[in-house]
Length: 469
Ligand code: UDX
Ligand code: UDX
Image 1 (cartoon, rainbow, N blue to C red):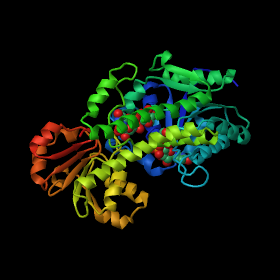
Image 2 (tube, rainbow, N blue to C red):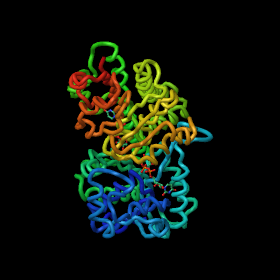
Image 3 (cartoon, protein in one colour):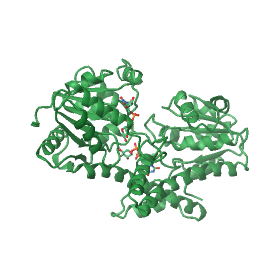
Image 4 (cartoon, rainbow, N blue to C red):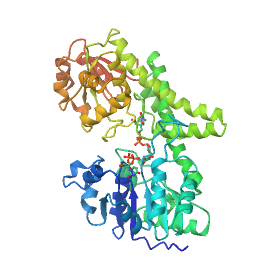
């Protein structure tokens, strides 16, 4: 087979989600000579990507709508015509979701690869010319070989080169992360055609990144590195959260500890913010994956070690909810608790695995009345998150929880506010007005450490900040 590095005219990406959408938009904007088509089986999602009003894009990311505005209809297209896009492209990215399995073997831990397998089978069916197939979704180690086997055994006799090219973008900073990536990882076979495929994909990123930031590895290293990068990041958050619990019992301040250890250049300052617990579509899922594969190879100690990162995260969320209950005199039944934030972090409308979901669940079980304000998350999404847990009926959730669009009105007669996402706007509110409107004593539980303790206390609040006594 003969791939030449300059021959890429068309790229197809299957999956128009949080990863596929922004990644392809950036590629289109940096490679004007390449036509990029993002396909998805979800018509509603494609319609949103094609919406004239760019505020209706299905993914909110700072800077994204500007890029889509410049490229859409020129060399960036969103479509449901999956087969056509596969047929025409030289490079096909697979960026479909790989949720944690909810059934059968590996339930609750292993990644469900059914969508990836469906994609591979479809590519095999449709492809009439040689293709480079790139796995972009986070996948368990050795998935590339499964994809390869499907393609080779069911295809039309054309050649496929499979690459692993994991995405390291973080939500809320996706565009910047893509444009200024620390590194791009490309895993592929060490054969001649494998090397050509790696170089071909590399040439796309070289449009805007220096070549030395594009790392080439074998497929398994690439697949594993993605899981390990997320596991290490999550481990840092769980580590500092563990220390936050200790700080609350002593007179230490977790921010001071973070600063003190973070200035050690070997440790570094990032990912040391104590919080109500990490969320997002990747951390938990990737660690569970790591735990699952380690266990499946009989590496019990390795599996247990990484599992502890999740156990600590669950503890942090539970601890936060329990603290609200015990502080409010051991009962929250009928008490109005206002949530500032529902997204798993600021600057995104994504709520997957958000700590807010578990905290709401715990408080709703105690019959609290919750009012939620989040600047970007829709009411529909919030109820979908709660209903998905299945703890209560949708009717009961509707009865106990309200979603509002005005945060200041919401605090009228509230017993407490819980800050669950670090949206910048929360810092700019008139906390004095908020204090006046609330029932006294007025409690604020700051799960993101964004407010000033001295100031909040001088306004009269009973203020609890994670990681500080
Ligand atoms: C994806 C992967 O799910 C995840 O493993 C990886 O870590 C990051 O990339 P994300 O883009 O956030 O995550 O997922 P999501 O927003 O759910 O988008 C996936 C899209 O694929 C959905 O729009 C879905 O409709 C689409 N899809 C799914 C297909 O087009 N075809 C399928 O067969 C299955
Ligand atoms: C993560 C990885 O950062 C990214 O490289 C990968 O591609 C996908 O998974 P993401 O989940 O979008 O990205 O966000 P991230 O910024 O990593 O935050 C994850 C969670 O950890 C959030 O809930 C965040 O609030 C929390 N967090 C992060 C902390 O609680 N404290 C910190 O210091 C950092």
